[in-house]
Image (cartoon, rainbow, N blue to C red; front, side, top):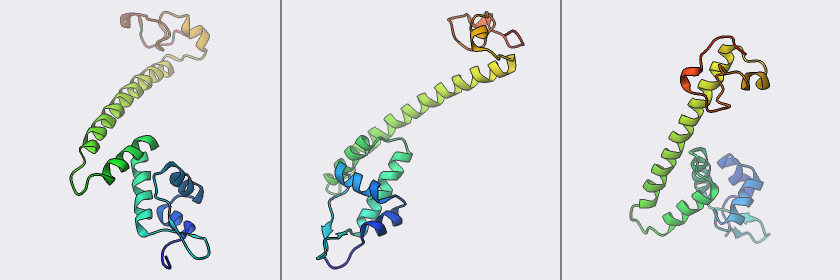
Length: 148
């Protein structure tokens, strides 16, 4: 192969470092490139696209194992739509919604703790009006206001 991109060029074009490029090769996310007569790795433009897809999938919350599964499914689709992507995207969306719900709960508790003036976790945890859910206090026993 006389034309192609060297490792540094691919990494720069895709916005990753060379160690990431090599790691993805070892994980099987990227095909092992051909070598030049001088022994340099030589990649095609598709390697840049693959790296961008991997990084985009990670930003969407997919793990590298999940990305590997998606890429493997895509390699075997032979021009047909990949159902696995729809199912996995729907599952990932459900995970994201659950995380948002958890973060909303955390935010509400922290805002209540700030509003209540909580300054000592040990003292606050022992107070029946503590807004942080340390115990299974009934919701009606919790109220905002300086009590801690």
